[in-house]
Amino acid sequence: MSSGKEAISEVESAPPTPPPPVSAPPSRVHSPAAPGGRSPLRAMATPLASPVRKAVATVRGCLEEVGHITRLADPRDAWLPITESRSGNAYYAAFHNLSSGIGFQALVLPAAFASLGWTWAITCLTLAFAWQLYTLWLLVRLHEPVAGGVRYSRYMHLATTVFGERWVKILALLPVMYLSAGICTALIIVGGGSMKMLFGIACGEACLARPLTTVEWYLVFICAAVLLSQLPNLNSIAGVSLVGATAAVAYCTMIWVASVAKGRVPGVSYDPVKAPNDVDAALGIVNGLGIIAFAFRGHNVVLEIQGTMPSTLKHPSHVPMWKGVKVAYAIVALCFYPLAIGGFWAYGNQIPPNGILSALYKFHSRDVSRLVLGITTLLVIVNCLTTFQIYAMSVYDNMEAGYVHRKNRPCPWWLRSGFRAFFGAVNLLIAVALPFLSELAGLLGGISLPVTLAYPCFMWVAIKKPRKGTATWNVNWALGILGMSISFVLIVGNLWGLVEKGLRVKFFKPSDFQ
Image (cartoon, rainbow, N blue to C red; front, top):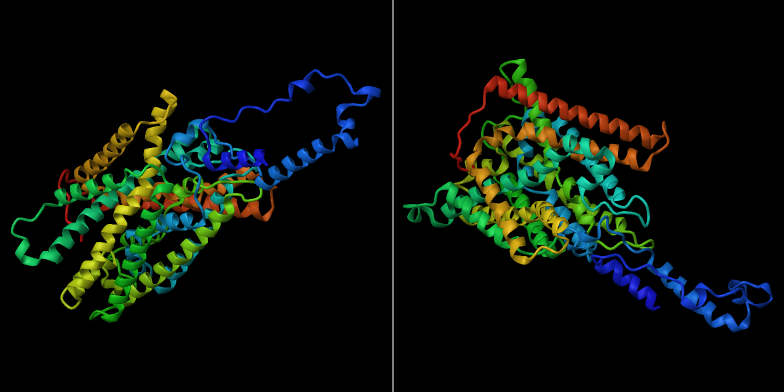
């Protein structure tokens, strides 16, 4: 049983160096054949060898119970934030997936309904939800495609295996970087702006004689985010993700309930917004489809979340991971649909471009209590702070990997803290210096869309190699090509819109979040 315990310890702790090879006892290496021409294995059939047979059977039973030892792609990965701890479970997976899968993007869903109308918007929302859930299932199963083989605990590792070192930099590097660092920058803008709004709600006119500027609120937000990011690894922020997920569910529910309770605004209409010409009409449809597609996020961190779990032949990691994903996205659906449908019912085509939260402030700032507005804004801030951690963790992992692979030793705590502070400072600089990036969100989102809807399908075909012409082969190729086509349409449409309307470039002049 000692060998079994050692194997269990190996799965849980994932040491930085592989276990030494097991060699045969010295007495057996050079021993001659047993008397009478029988081999030592045949001699085990005698009554004298029964203790040995019992020991072998016991060890074999323990190994079958434990399964196989989880093998890291590189032993030094045990020093990195993503794979440092492998004690995750289905609950942690649900917390992380819910925190990364729901956020401020959901608040803009009613604006997509204003562009597409009831029927097409609900149809597209349902199809997008089913599609992204299917690609999530593909990624969960591709995390460890061969039992006992290498685990792909990072999206870029899996993409490199499929596309190769050269093409992965062209196809996947920019989209994955945008989905991690870009979302962190957006969280600074939304979180810092919400802090400013909360201060105004709490203090009123009395405390607004010398208010902090928008940039100063960004600084307050990033200081809090960097302080919270000192937790060492992805498993250690499971409680943080639970708080963030709870806050997201709470503010989504509060916003749509408050909007529906106040009834429809005067002059509401549910017809799609009429554009002055065909070009603007096409851009409006593209914008609506983009809002729905970009509301579903988290694929770039799902492999990292699964990498925090132990895995054996008897208990593979994809089982608890998929349980967590199903629970998380059931809750996501319960938030998205009421928010989109209730928000569009209440505001119709008068919904502001920034979504239902802006509509709540615009139409009901006087008839909704300050307590409700303050709690809702506070929950948005909490969600932004906690979501920042899970999306930044993959960036921290990449930054520390450079040091670990070069020095062949763990990253010291002071350097780890420095990396995280540096990343926060860079995101703050981008949020302040390039406030017009929000106008490029559609273009960058179109570039990153294949990470969610197309690449997992191609990865499944490349690694699992289903037989040509089978249903699995046809479905994955069709979805992959369709995802790339939608990405191309969104990129072209947004470039077209930028050419037609122009780009308002204002460096170092961030506007207030409304």
